[in-house]
Image (cartoon, rainbow, N blue to C red; front, side, top):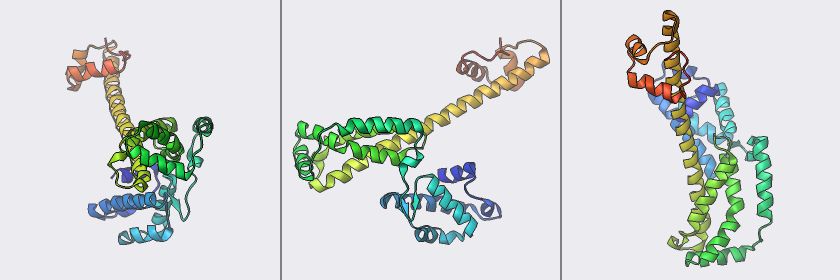
Length: 266
């Protein structure tokens, strides 16, 4: 349902069709379908065709305007319609500068042929640490390409690349579990993507927690201000608790989280 809330907040989709008596099952189906389309796009190089989107949403009977808003939402989230989007178009100037500097550093590393890479994978699968370290260098650009696809979701490109590189280094030490060298690309790519997705999810959870803190502080500040204005003086925590029904601990926590900056409380 996260995608549904994102669409509501961004105004990317008109939810009138939900509000006109359509039951919750259809709302759930919409969110599920949207997630399936994004998963399909990831399998296809972050791209879907108009026909695939129309076919996926056909059971919901969206009109042309609603369907167009779905397309706009997908493009906003780096899903190309008919052809892949350029992930760098979504980067900030700061991220572009960082990216160029980082790519310049990578460019100074030794170059390897495909044959050398395959030989290195086989050696890494056998547990040779030197080969594993060389593989990390070989896959650094892959990490950058994946990070660009995940940019714009609340985590800096630099942090995404960092998380991807850690996952890459970890993954090269796990190649011994593979049966064939050809499986290395898929395994390492998945580990890198999983690490970046986890980073994004953790960041979103932290932001949600931060918002709760801000809401709590603002609520206490507002109530303290009202009571302070009525009494024409600063109020005590106990007075505020008695007046609002809030617990003393909740008020004390809010004062502490504000850095003791709620002026209306003694």
